[in-house]
Image 1 (cartoon, one colour):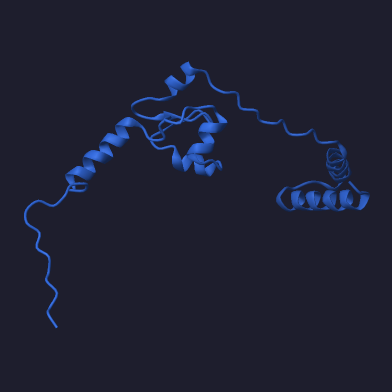
Image 2 (cartoon, helix red, strand yellow):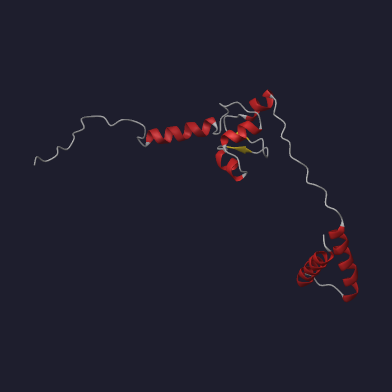
Length: 140
């Protein structure tokens, strides 16, 4: 970093710190030196995240009747779609990244059955029974 950029950043950080925290004037040089020293240290490159493909046993264990275990954070979800979208995945890219089969479920079986029963109870997905009459167009 250029010295002027480093000086500006140090000034901003120390200024913001002093706005929120009480400090004596005697502590100020040590605070400035500490912030300046921290900014001068080279930052290590962030580790690249290489997702290893889960084993078939891990894939089987991740599919539970009450939820699907995410390979991103290890938490159980009834539906993975929203969770995947918050991490920038589509169901297909998630399957590709973690080496999952194309038929890997995104929705838990119990949740899917509950939604199906609810839809059937509401009468969705069934054809109307009885005669349906079409309205005849008036003759001209």
